[in-house]
Amino acid sequence: MNEMIELCVPNMVAANPNMSDEEAGKIMLEWFPTLKRWKN
Image 1 (cartoon, one colour):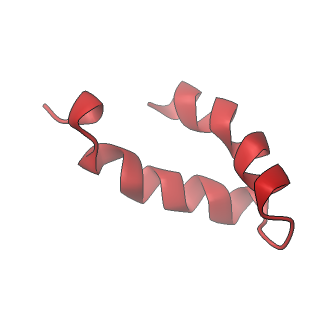
Image 2: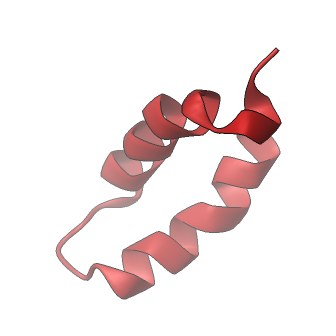
C-alpha cells in the first residue's frame, strides 16, 4: 500500500495545486484501507 501511495502522491498534488505531498499522503493513508482491494 505504501508503494501505491508513493506512486499516487505526485498525481494528486498535480491535480490539487494547493495540496502538499504530506497532505496527499495522509489522505490516501486514511482512505486506501477502506477500499475493497486493501481490506483483509
